[in-house]
Image (cartoon, rainbow, N blue to C red; front, top):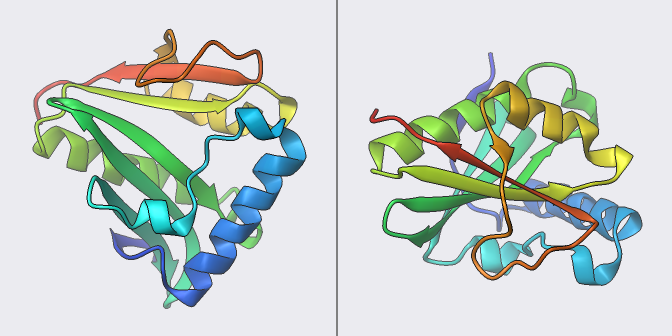
Length: 155
């Protein structure tokens, strides 16, 4: 059974997963287009962090960054290679959406890559109602980035 719960990005297994995430981002996108946060930033006061685990084994992680009243940004969605295709990303995203609604968020944003590597992520977000939007929260138009948003209903 996959369990999603609050966690810290500073646990050893999470640090390894995030290191792989950052390595893939830098291997896929130019450095100026990588917007993934490092573990220290993910532990910041304006970010809530979750992991998905099965029998205590890490399957994935995701974070929700507070942008302002009623606004949030999804950060660092990552599923381990061995867990891909098992619904881990959907479980994490569902938890983030529930948390955002109960926390009073009205709109969620995200930035992901435009390259082929990010197609599965974009499909996941589209299946959950995210649509393209202009850059937000200090991001700038970038051919390597896709910006998406979701209007939330009251939860």
